[in-house]
Image (cartoon, rainbow, N blue to C red):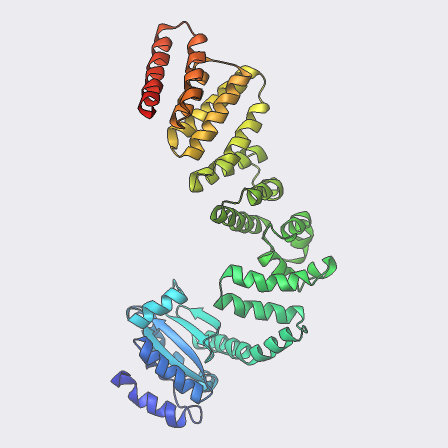
Amino acid sequence: MINKRSIPVLLSLLFSWGLNAQNIDFIGVDDLEEYSKMLNIARSKNLSLVVCIYHPSDPFRQMKKDDVFDQPELEKAWSGLVPLSVDVRTSMGARWMDLFPARDLPAFYFLDTDEILYHTIKGYQPADKMLAATQKALELINAYLSLKEQYRQHQLDAKGWNTLLQIQALNFSFRETMGLALEFLNGRNDAQLFSKEALPILTLYGIDLETVYPQKIIDKRKAIASQMENFDFADYYERAYSYNLDLALDNGDTVLLDKIFEVLLPANPDTSLSIEELQYNTAVLFAEEIEVFSPWKKQALARAKKLQNDTLKAQYLFNEAFDITDEYNSPAAVRVAHQLAAKANVYYETFRCRMLESYTAYLLKEYETALQLVTKAAAVTDNPINLQKAENLKKMIEREMEEEE
């Protein structure tokens, strides 16, 4: 049921809304049923909506006390709108905040009756700013049909594309909006891409390493900065890095990770870490997040290769293999640790490298290999303590082999 407090306003809406508005009264709705009724009424009257999400303790009440909604110009602008108020604590408020989160309340959302969102404004607003927000929203609502038709006819100019993408971004996810933006970018040559009108789209949506745009932006970042006052390459870099790394993590995509290494990391504006360190840290993060260890292995082998002598190389790879074995117990992790320990022994055979290589083979249940390796470990030491360690591991391996028979 519609709240009793809203009945006088509802009657006004049904019979005279938009003709001789004297002041702005919000219609309170608490649940989806009430909201749906008001949406249907707005459709029947060919009106749009402004929805205010509020909490009793926020400045919405103060805006009413300050007569923000009783200003003649704002009243006139809102004559084509149905103003709804939704307490954030109600079921409708919770539903709305799931769809359109807002940190600051009150939050005002301007929509058409297809529930396409065109503009939002948040926090306490004086009448002049509320009027400006309303005019902007109405302008977008009025332009939207024309923009869609121009899009269908392939007649949108850069300004129209910017406007269409602003509306798209309010209603859909970033990735969905990027799909539309790529239609614009893919239809431009380099001269058009780097025009003043196209740069806002290029620098916002040209972040996917599956496209050519990140490399283009990196190559021409100084030229872009000279044309766009608000272009911050460090911000662009962070967005591109986060987007592509999240995508690589979501899909376990080591090919995309290699592109991050090759294209993005060398352009990192923070020079406190070398490219090699950035690559290594990202590979370790990849392993930590989704337990894909092949990039870590690749980076460890590359770093070891640059060390001065075989002893240092073997020591470094042993440490990497030990850390992986100590921190992770998945077969993928143990396999990489085993391979790193084996490579350490190629560089410089030592008791502890052979023992780790044997132990990881044991964890992988490759008992014949583990037995051969622990025998090699015992052969390269005469230390009684080490020999006892080798004997203990050998017994563990043999016990497992006997249980398998």
